[in-house]
Image 1: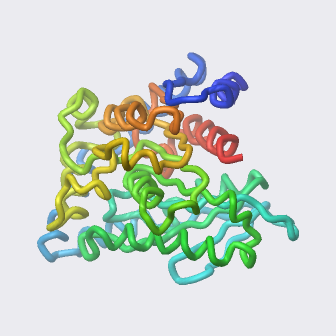
Image 2: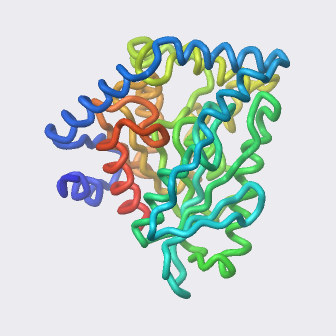
Length: 328
């Protein structure tokens, strides 16, 4: 990764947009285009139908989608993993001894309806492999079986667990961060703003987060609504499944609608956006509202999914290095 990208991040005191070098962005765009060409043209539509059927009580197709995204990658030689509870997996650098390391609590994406400990394992492994921190992945409850606020409650509880057991986990209690991609990014923001987590979260790392659980009518929503890794049809089904009978304007759901009174509680944050993504504009608006608390970096050529689905290797590796440097 170009040193200049990290330099830009280190020197950035506010939310000003930063982009990769032209050379890096060309690679990201080429890889994203190849990734999109390899994606079945009807995949997003079939996933949307699966979520819709599950909302109506038939979960067979959604369970198949979940299983298809539940393959565990190989664990790197420098990382060990252990299940602390049935829903919490800890990734640790090997031979870290008794040194207390920072902890990243990671919340997977998948539109609140699919995704698992395994779907985010590639990222968690890469972060722990740096040898600089530990990662705690959370298998929160999924919609539509468990709509809002069930998943959020699980994420808040995970922070409480890590805070209470920091000494046992070999974690620096003053350096507990939360991160997530897409819907996981939404949950990370909402978790950090919850009363229960006040004073417990040092920072946030967000990848193309959902900040509004409704059709925001933005330019990116309309321009990239089909064929760019996350279709608007599927996102609307995700929103419907998660929100269920709640108000989509609830600030714990549509965190992008929070005012300064709430965003004043936001810890320092890094937001890495995919430029060709329906969520790009709402993330940019959230960054403006968050102000100096948040640094936003855009990968203009990238598309949604680069954290959890292989195929956009340059965007993935750059994101890992930027996130690691930011957290530390």
